[in-house]
Length: 454
Image (cartoon, rainbow, N blue to C red; front, side, top):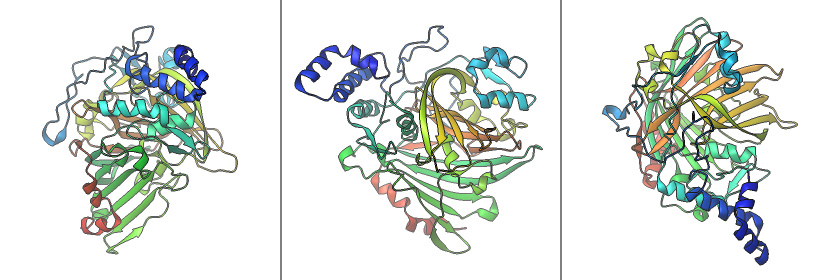
């Protein structure tokens, strides 16, 4: 992917070589210029439509989604009808645009369907983010064998990734707001069709990495804080948790603290990283399955396979507005509730490093080129069997402006159980605020005790 910039930046390269300037800096400068006015969007996606016209060109215009009561945003494409429906009966005709996990769900569950709608490249972000990405193109780098990001701030670090680790950091550092709050449910479903609300929590997310007053040379390395206050079910009400994520998470794994009402004290949490099971997901998802992947990459070699055009869940404001009874079906989400579109995605393949362990021996992640966020994921077990598949659903907030995944599912293809996490169907919408360093006082271990009570 770097070669086009070597070719297109001829004058800059000659100047760079003549003056002894490092080639990567020259390439970075050419890339930064292309992000502003060339063939790439400001975060590194292809501006142009695909050759068939089924993926339109990116125009950079935000879609109107005014937050209504409870910050519920409307579905701007509610009037559209599917242009294609894929089932187990016809999926062979569309196999090249389907992931292994999607095909497995179609084959396993009668009634599962992929309804494909017209594609809208609705992901638009603030100019300040675009400016930061252009600067990151010339200053961001990976150290510690690709495990630590340095020099990046305020936007995805690698708009044209050279390897899988760079692309995976783009996913984790993609824009999800500065201060984001919502209340969400987590449902676990059995293969027999039973549904259990395992968790309802007020979620508050702070992203110091996107503090507009910050600077890369003064950045502490702490890119996100999360506070989770459990309100249901009654047996767990009053529990609270706070976590911190770092850009050098290989050296500094995720920190976490938990408040348990019965003990009336805050304790340092046990491991919240890697494949530690999430108790509220009943074994279907682990802590590194949040947003389809989060955490340190040191247990995997991550390969950048390339780009594909595939059908992915996208522009799912309509999904979030439906009652949960209309959303959760047998084995999968109700196909009537989920919107799929054809998008270009980066394909990453992660395989275990020698001497390392994780219950997912291999992962494949599909990153949307317009947001850099994983929208689909597949995992294989140690025996090489396709074990789990995940789907993430994009909330469009043109008023922010942003487009980011919020709810997600993980399906155990072997047991038939599955989990629907981050569900805001019954709880309201998402509130976005500008970053305020004073707000970080709520994201401390000492603040848990005062807020996490029955």
